[in-house]
Length: 484
Image 1 (cartoon, rainbow, N blue to C red):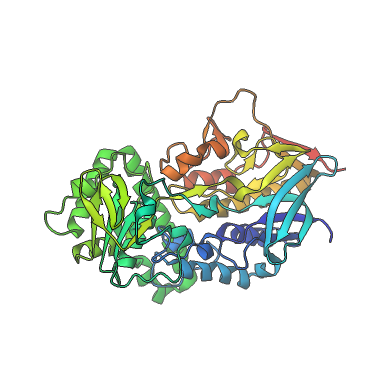
Image 2: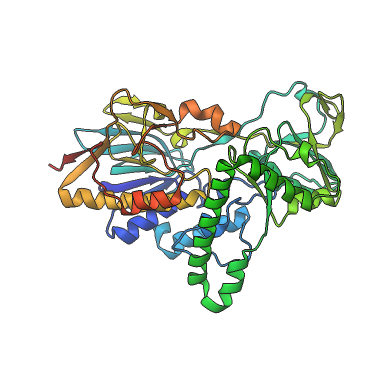
């Protein structure tokens, strides 16, 4: 086949979003999306543990071009998967997806000014090579073949079943069982109420508490405006309001951490039984938004505790034994099922190996330009959303900027673009102030950011609107090569 203009890796929420902007802003672009699995959705088609949902509202986590029309603001995994697939189908993007194409490696040739991408058919084993002017990685950062589980002493002694949410067995029967969920992050907060609906009892065992906010399951503004203004205008207004709300909460937490801590604690106390030890189980040792705030949609997590169907234990594990877990305090937690909601493993670029003119490129050796392009890597872009607000907000802006960059190159007669960092530039981890264990464990493998614009990754949507949507494309740190 002839060369492509753009090859996108991944048919998840990022890949479909980038493809939409290509089609809208650059009609006629020859592009394809390679997806290793057999369906659209990425993370939302892969993770299937009970209760899985977004902890961002769908007015901001969803696309600006496709209104979210359901009543609930925080959607479950299957609903998000269906939403993404519908967006692809409505815009004809699904016709550009090649399923069961797992990208193994990609190499850039300066002589040919093309990427050669080697992929394998996961259904037949066949290998093939595709060529493209630009490579856009929308593969996310989760390592899908394994989750993270610490080495627990005595694990082999436990007579029950141990499962990790990432590889949830669909035949697991939780009815009437005693379940211990190890962990206190977003996965655990969604798992507990979902499991408590059928289990005899669910205990969330945490080493370190998290901040958990109960938020309404429905968006009040959208509920009131839909009958009057219709879906599209309601979605636009609710999106703007929720973007502002996210920013205000984040700024409040980071600028006034003590006040924010007291505010969250008061909210927790109101939705828990009188006298509940909030200062023990919901009192993290770090400031609000140094790790992502967990969301209990509709307060379901707290309701499970209030109803006696779930409980929280803050302690450390000494060892597993035949009947459950012995804690360092000497207490015993008996269980029929233990769920290790202990986090995920990350990998840069979905594990795809890159080469530039025959030399291996390590993501950790690069610096991100505007959080999207990699220093020293020609015609390559990466989709990296926000950690401190809805991921997809940034993906939309990156898609817009990418199209503006391609238009600028066409106008000026360029066919190669490569960011060049200044020698000796000070660098820092891409997610410097974001402290979850899964991020810190993998920081040494991820791309880095600089200490000043345009190498410093922004966490502010309004600032990125100015930078990516309205700011100039040309920059002295970008080296453009004229077309032959």
